[in-house]
Length: 250
Ligand SMILES: [Zn+2]
Image (cartoon, rainbow, N blue to C red; front, side):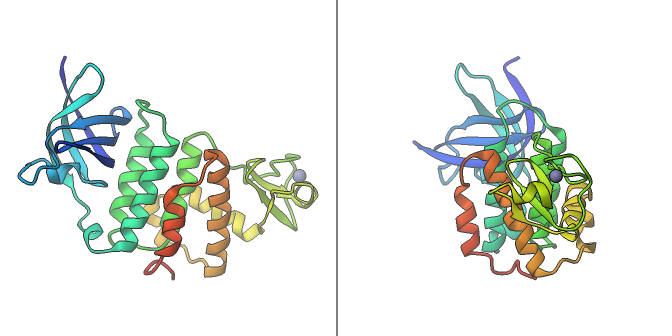
């Protein structure tokens, strides 16, 4: 069968000259995939709207020798708030980069697809950075890096009193294990409880969670270090995001 359908969010659209774009999609059916979209950068192309980054579209794809190509496409949700809010564009870019960096090609993950789409939808009305933190810890867990939060990741005993978080050992550490781990970050029992909530609550419920700005900053640092450790490289947009955080601090 030469033609097949996918539903996908556009992660990236790279100009290839001649009006063509190379799209990186995150699809419900096949996970991350690269496809060629011919002529879509031309001003009169009717496909333009459906191939923009972060747009959720339906695609009819044609199998090709090297890359499959877009035969038809139609935007389903354009997340119009992204057109007017730079801060949210930065958040969406960061999420797209995380998905791109952490997922293998052509491995579908329905749970991640729904999480990504739900988070993009919720961002229209809820712009707290906890939404991003929930996305970070959930995508880490879905990709096989679920942090150990119930016991010490070092000695597997219950944690009490002083608590640390170790990106390298993959979770919280007791005082004994934490003092011997140079990469361990300061943490607290309360913060561990918030990490558990971010991991388990549906994103739509997060507006019920109230967290002090100081604690939010600690969580941000811990999850950034955790993801960095697992990705072994800095995401370009992390630095970018730190410069354009207006509108997201509570
Ligand atoms: Zn321990």
